[in-house]
Length: 163
Image (cartoon, rainbow, N blue to C red; front, side):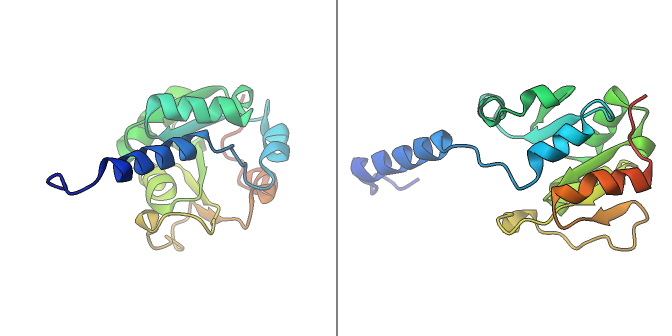
């Protein structure tokens, strides 16, 4: 790509920076542990994440939250079809399935398009690439300020409860 103009020192620094990012400790968002404690056993909980299989498995293991989930789906892309398959595999279909995430583009919109609920939890550090307009008029779209509000919202929706 650089036609040989990037020094080996610069390449070494890039590799070191990448390794440092991989080794950075997992910092969960506020209210994650208490929310998972509240939901475990009452709802079927599935992590849906995209990216490199090894890296995502490593991050989940390092987080200490892996045991909270009934299933883990690491996908190459979060599309309407991806959500439809996962909603069918782990639940009663999309009507009782809920996707909670900080990306409108990758989490909320494809889940809504698949027929599920989409709950948006804004986060200041979400990538610009993940920007999309809020589907505020969609009947299955909701927004909460933080994960601590999730249990009460799910109770009002009556969606996704495990049988």
